[in-house]
Length: 111
Image 1 (cartoon, rainbow, N blue to C red):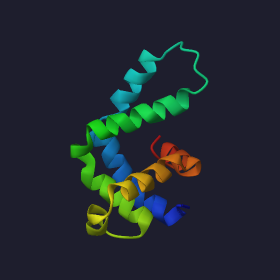
Image 2: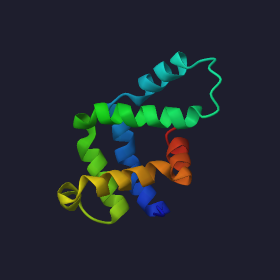
Image 3: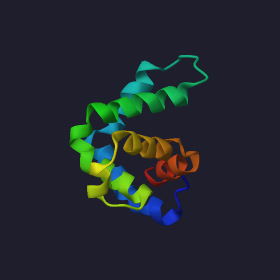
Image 4: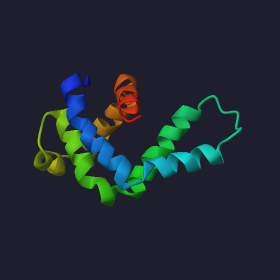
């Protein structure tokens, strides 16, 4: 799945809401402190997995935003996303998260 500029810009406000609502900044500081000095060549991957776990733990706070992001990616609407198989929703969210260019875009936009 390729996410173009327009879709990425449409997703950005929802990504910011997720970051704010579940306090990703504090989570990131804690993760970095806990892993300081560790020699792990796969630290970025590990951080990504831990961030996804943090989002899942707090999904009740950001469910609407996740639906919005998935709907934008699938070019559908929230009602369709709510009714579809959870596997499709997870795969879409996963493909967004695994899109290196999109993640780099969000990271730069949120600095």
